[in-house]
Image (cartoon, rainbow, N blue to C red; front, side, top):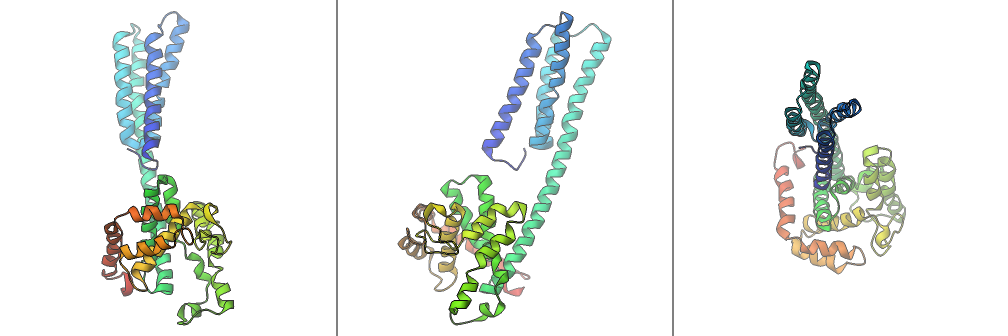
Length: 326
């Protein structure tokens, strides 16, 4: 059935469909067709049978609409069999309504499925564009194209284990992916320096979270991600930048990201430590650099999971057209 909402959301929508069919059917079966006033009520109730197929089409696409229309048709046929009218015009009306259930269910279901596919294709194009952007930034700053993608995947693992709802995880993933987008404004010579930054250069460098935030907040579907970009250099004890946020004042996505990026930095760059050793170092900074609750989640994840993510991008870098072959 349809995509775009959580399993809980699906169950709620299915419950609404079942309840609507049950209520319409209950009144349709219980209310007599005579006198004429009740017959008018019957006509209204028959029209209400059209609602569940259309709702199912909008929520679940063609398959959901077909299943719902089958159920509605069975209920409608049972009622018609038990109370088949002697009037030929009324018989024709009921047969016409039965056919109409399928038209109003399947046609919108097909159209909603088509629209959903187009939206997914557009979203994929947007995602690929973002990947190209962050890969170029990673090559510029770290001489590897997959830092941001790995950190995004690490962050999503932590978010899932932390219990973040599926809808919020998407924004967190985008924020992690685009965390360094503000570095577009940093002069090239600063990335080529082998020594440390001067105080003036450090001040310029530390503007990148705010500049990334200002860039992304103007894009509708990236506004939540922009908040994570703005706070991705904050520390749990308040010694980070640019705003010096502390503790739970730092957005959860940024707190998850901070641990994920440290994991990537320790295991891929610098000394390229094992995930076990990196976990020990991060634990030692729990409560200062990192949120203790997030660190607790980190240590419960088996190192093999992190290794599988890292290996997936290592394999990509060996494909012509990826990594250093770009």
